[in-house]
Image (cartoon, rainbow, N blue to C red; front, top):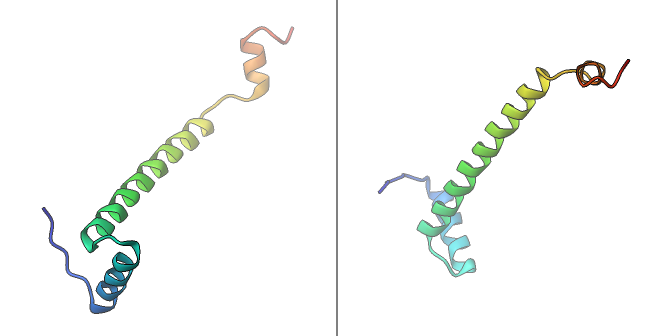
Length: 70
């Protein structure tokens, strides 16, 4: 369980959004946190992939290594 404090403007926006979506504030906050965590996981994966590409070999190096260039 978690407790958060929101300024009045954000809380009013959250109430309004919950009302028009037929949901409640807790569900909207839960959904937003899940998206935030997923986005951060995606960012970490993208950074790992970028780091791996930076340490990758050139096409010429791969061709030589695989015996494709004679």
